Length: 583
Ligand code: ATP
Ligand code: MG
Image (tube, rainbow, N blue to C red; front, side, top):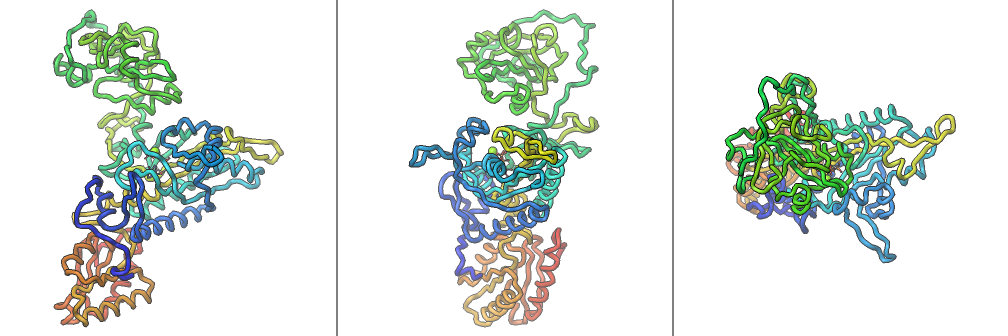
């Protein structure tokens, strides 16, 4: 491909509304352009990367016996009402009313559609195990579309669905997809960690997320510094401390509860500073509303309530923070002064870490007032103890109990679930077993954010000059850079090499633009093609051409007649994973 012919508009400037480095690079290197918030056009360069990722995904899915199909984006709303997810997805759903006044959904995911299909087409145990997948556009009206294609409103997902006769069958399908995912992400050049994950509104019991470590990641994961344990923050357990840690020290007579005046002071940090106490002595009381009923949730200052855990504990479909009005009605106090002492008539859920604690400070359910010296056992009527907080840096690993936890930012690129019968039950998908008895089909679902892979890869693989593509998903393998297009000898040489590469089926970009050499260098580094072939006047006069590896910056001068065999050799090395050490 000649640069003068391809639509590959590079930009020197950092685009105004791009914050994440991947977003900046995707725009600057001409992969995407924004149409409107969270909606992007893929230019030819970006589409080439997508096609490569999709090819890897197809190869790995097919190698596990999964079959590709294509499901529609337009889905009748009734299907979603039947599965009970119309409400759960809420405002994320993009809907439209058609000319027959029927409400339709633009598919945010396809569990409902595929289950409806399989319900009709799969009736016998002989037809399973079955894994079906598609690579297709999804639509979600994300509350905060950002970071370009990382969180967009229209994105490409690979979604696979497994259908099995029984749980052991599902376990096999799940493992196949899990292994295929590891191979896909590795081949795409990602450094990733599979973590135990919450199943959330998807349902089911077991789930893993595939996380790419990156500072801009919107998710946090907890990894043990010693053992293999890795989990998303919504899943990572904070178990009940062992008995020894929560025994009350009865040798010291508890102080009587005391109200103290804390005018206008309500945040954990401010109260701790005002009362000269350590923040872990603070008892945070957060009022939620669960299915129209207020609930008081207690965690230690310095801990955060984990809403996914709370939802699991409450088995809630509808949990939200209470409004100021509800807080006032429930506690008689303005926001910031809620506390559990004397709070009656509502459920009080306390985090395990508070068990047996004394000398705590909480709001007094009175404006500008706190209570000190609270003893959980003596003073608080806890209705339920549970694990409702997020794990923290250096907390003890819940698996090995030997080392601390490390919290890291990460990007979720894939998610696999053992769904069980959640959808086959609500949509009535059954099969006849060997005895001719009807059973519910057992299901799994497996998603990859295809477009998000590009952004995640770029977060991990760039330098100050631009993108560093790996061999496997680079839009081109080689870029030829004649530094002076007015020089006939240079252009002749460049044309010859270009043709030789084309004959060898090498994906080559020929920078035939009549621009300054400095611009060519900058653009080549920005767009990140692995092998640069630099043809300059001085070198060529001595029969020499320079080869540069984008990743390492290593350069080598080669006799001009030896460029093609040398590059072919490099390509052999580059195709092997991981990338070669050098020239
Ligand atoms: P997130 O927590 O990031 O919103 P999710 O849990 O909603 O993701 P799934 O429904 O499991 O995501 O979708 C499967 C995959 O699709 C995700 O692992 C992610 O890689 C990708 N994905 C989800 N939402 C988006 C989005 N708005 N833009 C781009 N990719 C997305
Ligand atoms: Mg989401």
